[in-house]
Length: 65
Image: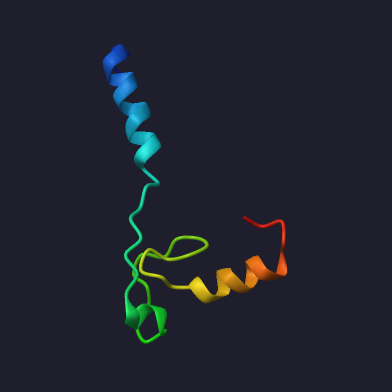
């Protein structure tokens, strides 16, 4: 990616923007802690892992959004 073509630079910026994008798809076994979340992301995994912990954190920190 040495090319300085403006179109390629724009495409790289768009790719970088979406690199952290994830779709949350909660499922019951993960929410119950029966199976681990294979897609762990902070603070909540993509399948719902650590959802309860994030709510406790939110309640303990009123300024937390």
